[in-house]
Image (cartoon, rainbow, N blue to C red; front, side):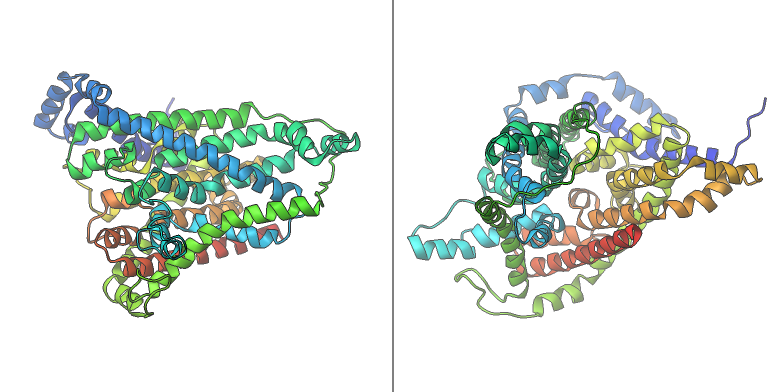
Length: 564
């Protein structure tokens, strides 16, 4: 019996082919290089007999030498241990800091909640390497806070920003939103009647928190902690700016092995280790989220009763405002630096000018255009793939596509960049340095955001609406395009803004894959910082941040209109 090939079958194979070529094969390439010690040309082997024989010869020389080098190299092992320790510390301290803040937002009548919530979005609009540079402006040897500290105490430094403490500080203060809002949701979901019952029996607010509120929120808190660990472990922007030379971190080591020494085997092994660690903690986070949630059963929902204690609200407000003040000052420092003529000997710049912005628009306008063009291309490709993935996962139950579309979540940006370089550095697909490989890399890295959004919307669309159109004579493809497509627009709109914003801020892939011709803003800012052109770097960073803010305002507006 001959099987009919319709449009959906073709698109399904197209989506599978995309994941195989640009995700599975690069990961396979990393695995092979880890055991052969040299790059292999998988695609070249498919069209050339000589290349195929060469690849077979490389695979025949299978060896555990590179893996052995990892476990016997004190530098590699130290970098892994340092990264694990750093990330665990960041996850722990971030959770401890977010606990009172989340409780304040969820359970109390703390004043100025809307203002504080707005300030809590600042870490989300600043890439970590820009945040790190802002902290150098504040706490570096010539930073303005350092100047004030020196004038008050006579001591040279408040602390060394180029240290483990500096990295931890930046990551805590710019990753806490990843933990804060899930923890707020966890506290809000706890059964209010239990807390009221405890208080009616004479329990104090602090004891009610320890014995009732906190235990009910534990799954959300643990999930948030593991998420922060994964984000911290994969972060490239903070350590590349702040890590001292003596501090080895695995993400920086992988970058240096690839970009500095062209050590294919070393970079492959480090990438493999990063993926394994990130995947383990990602799995733990998902496991806790899905399997360890618990709550209470009650006859009817209870209205949240907020705590009115003036003393508690004041204490929580002071604590929350103090935490949010530092990222706000970092953004303010960046703004001042973008207008500064010179800055470093006094708490404020010696003069102000628009020349930094004139320089950016005259010499780097193409980088702004590149960022917008690459983000636009990524958005189009992400939308196309996400629509069909969500359809096949929800309507056809494709577990394979669901797993494939989730894989990028466990691959650090540097790891994905190394995998793409090792796979697409030679003919027939010599794509390294082109706009196409950047768009594909961005799409793979950020596409899960779009897919999660469209899957959620797809699940809310009743299947019988689509079936009615099919029963009236429309093909499955036509009914999906004309009926399901328009209903997916809210999910597409929400996911689109998130994809566009994250691509604009993307650093690790840009640093590894972009050529001078296609350098986006993030790469240009990074290069300007390395060259000591701090004021023009600050100006371009602020332009990037403004673009991100505008896009987020648009997203909020669209979300508000959809809910009305």
